[in-house]
Amino acid sequence: MKASKRKRVVVAMSGGVDSSVAAFLLKRGGYDVIGFTMKLWPKEECGFHKPTACCSLEGISDARLISEKLKIPFYVLDLHEEFKKEIIDYFSNEYLNGRTPNPCILCNEKIKFGILLKKARELDAEYIATGHYANIIFDKRRKRFVLKEGRDKKKDQSYVLFSLTQDQLSRIKFPLGSYNKDKVRKIAKRMIFPVHAKRESQEICFIQDSYAGYLRERFKEKLRPGSIKHEDGSILGRHRGAAFYTIGQREGLGIAYKHALYVKRIDLANNAIIVGPKESTYFKDVVVKDLNWIVTPFKKHIRAMVKIRSQQKKARATLKIANGSTEIEFDRPQEAPTPGQAAVFYDRDLILGGGWIDSASPMIRRQQ
Image (cartoon, rainbow, N blue to C red; front, side, top):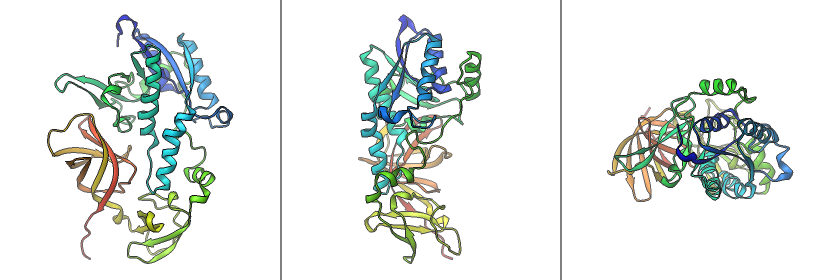
């Protein structure tokens, strides 16, 4: 990874081991590296957030320390207004509209590789880099930049990057794409980075307790109790507010029944939560909208592997492509495809594209 003529790259540094090693690898590769930490909360709130939060004092301090060790310039960029508008408001509105958001995808698209990329260009930087486990290459045959899974399949983050554009992909470096996590930690330890054993956070960075508590604190007047209904139409109980529930949820229903019940559907028009047995959460056909194609499809029907959540195994499906939407017909029904979440399409390790789940059709059950 040698850079010619000292090409400049801005590294988004969170204070964690991944972004720290990414900065080191780029510096070793001959790039002119600048470190940036994004402050995503107002000044008066930043110090009160847990260490794993997006702009904790610990995270900023660790990023600054690593930058000093690497002898690279370091800046803190205040993006709290943009973050609230693009991510927090979206997150809240999705739940209030009966959908389950994925703020990490939007943060990558709008903040890291959107606003921060523009800031990088203002500094005459050709690239922006992060510690994501994924790979970007230029496909000469297709004459496009394509996105591929990272070498470490357990850490692969290609799912949350599906919405990136060609312009963004052409300006991004993922130094960790060919590494596994153990190797990254060993590099950090060898470099005597104090973050080499730092704990990772799998939580939403701006949620301090639970998303339910977050919504309750800020939108109490919009959270109206309503009915919990069995799929046969009978009323089984009351819910605390539709925003507190998601498709496939079992815990927290507060219902005693002869068998386990799961959220099948959120009926926002009637402020009702529809529940049923686990098999009722399995769906075979899913409609996806707001698509982004990294690899342009040349057929109306194509075969692909599909993920409907980041930690799910890929499932075989046929994609039926129409104007503005795509219908996914899975070979086998999938558990709890959830409106508001992403469906990402793969050809082996190549990301074809993806979109946002809009609706799903239940499997046809056998007559008893």
